[in-house]
Image (cartoon, rainbow, N blue to C red; front, side, top):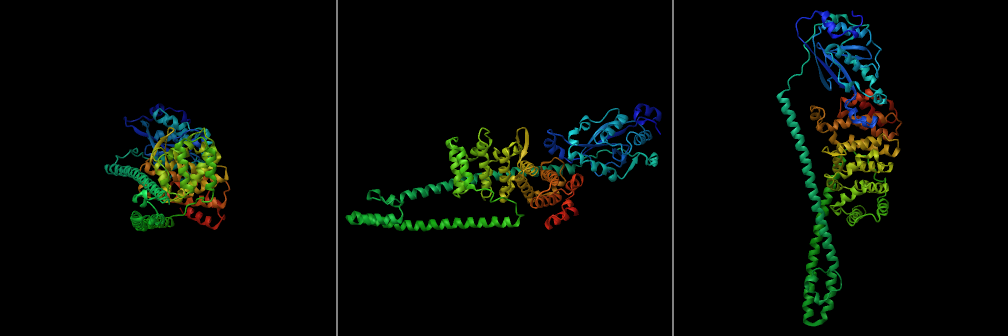
Amino acid sequence: MMGSPAGRSAAAAADDADMEGDVGVAVELYVYDLTRGMAAMMSQMLVGRHLEGIWHTAIVAYGREYFFGSGGVQSCRPCGTVLGEPDRVVELGETFIPYQVFLEYVLGLGETTYGPHTYDLFHHNCNNFTDEVSQFLCGKGIPKYILDVPQEILDTPWGQALRPLIDSLSEGARGVAFGQNANNSLRNYEPQEPRRERDVSPDLVELNSAIEEVRRNSIALEERRNEINEKLAKKDRKKKKKKQKERKIESEGSSPEFTPDSGSSHSSHSSPSSSRVSSGRCGGGGGGGGKMADAAEGADIELTAASDGKRSAEEVDAEIEAQERKEREEKKKQREPPVVFKDAIDVRVEFDALVGFVDGILSPEEQQSLEELHQYMLEDEGSWALGDGFLNFVGRLLHDKSLKSEIRVRLLNVLAAAALKDDVILILHQDRREHVLMNYAHDVDRLTLEEQESLALFICNMFENLSSSEWLLYISEWQYCNATISNIRVTTKVAVHSLLSDQPVLQDRGSAIIHNLACKEKMTQNLNLRRILPPGCKSKVFDDVAVELTMALLQFFNSNPPEEQLYRCMKALSRFCQISKQDVPQLIQMIGPEPAKFKGASERIDRLIESISIR
């Protein structure tokens, strides 16, 4: 047994071992992210800067994995802990130290500096151990970024919650400990061939390429569908405006001021009643008057027939619209009912307040857009009433910081009411290039409290209709303020920010958004396909979202939420356990609190807790 193993150099150990030949053994560093990607997503919010992960490391050499935890130095087969496969593997180099010499060294560490109960999360952890062992075997330490995990993130409740996971490593590792209870039979262990990466199967490469091609085609198809919908919306708007113009001309043409000099062309635009009035007036004027009377009478008959035909066409249109409405209602019945706030605002009051705030500051084009918004929201016209410049108007009011905050609040409240309308998707499709709405929403943490509340209301109400709720889940990405974002990422950010706020209104709306996200069919579609895709693939975004929202839910559970909000969140957690069957249950165990803490809150919550515990 070595008296001071940590102080001996690799060269001295090699001389003592009388090494035979120059056969080297590969030394690898297995790197695990204890947060399963959460640090990359949440560190900016928690500590103000981006971190890739909080790392646990192990040395792999001589066919075994060696690591340090609360139980001291441990050894198991590679990937034999509860962490499973590493997130990355760093090749540290080769060592020419015989296994027996290395074993003596590790046994010495397990009895001295890295014995049981010497573990300290901040100053004496697994990374300090692997750095020291790497120096012994290869003459160099592990990468600096692993050692530099900032103490400020470990000081957070999130960082402290990693301790139980570290404790569980020794329980899940079907191996041995190197300390007071060290297994001396290891001295007779014959080292295995070092673990090497297998060559990638050509079939797997082909499969991944095919999957990525399908994903790209899906995104292209989505973009194409948006273009077609936008063109159809424009065509519909032009058609509606043309009909309005025709009605206006007919209305003006029905004036009773009909004279013989007007000619028959005017009579064709007159109503039947005005034609009869005119023919009576002309009847006493002799032959010319008689001809005019006959012409007027003919026009009267023709107009009546035309009017009948027109009514018939309108009836057909109404029948088609009724059928489409019925189909939409049927689809709504088949899905999980979303949580929306239909009576949260009075749209007329909000619109009148908006008009007062923007009085005198709008350009003629913006004033026209305001009038179009009035037609859409208060005159119950369709989205065809909104012109091509409407999103420019909305963008200016949302992004011009020289304007009063009340303007943005009132506009968002009106848009929250618009989100409940069936055809709001036509407005959203106009925004697929400039991303006016979602760029604004991405800055939710910089907005005033009133703007945050109105924005959360708008996002939540978008789940009322299938098409607009699908729009919130789009995964197509774009750049904004040096960040890569998408609709689903922004929706998730608003949901998390709202739920973890200390304001009851925001918490209520945040819990509703997360509930609605969890109940969306798209979150569970293609689940099996996503599981075989590599980490970081865009198509796995829904799994990442499920994990991120789970983190927020668990943090929210540390408070004392009302029953309704608790029910929404517990229901969402149950759904996320289905979407991410491995990561979400592990997070619940690692971070807590256990859902069973809320047992007895209500019968419906107890049923959800039972379903979560089964998984």
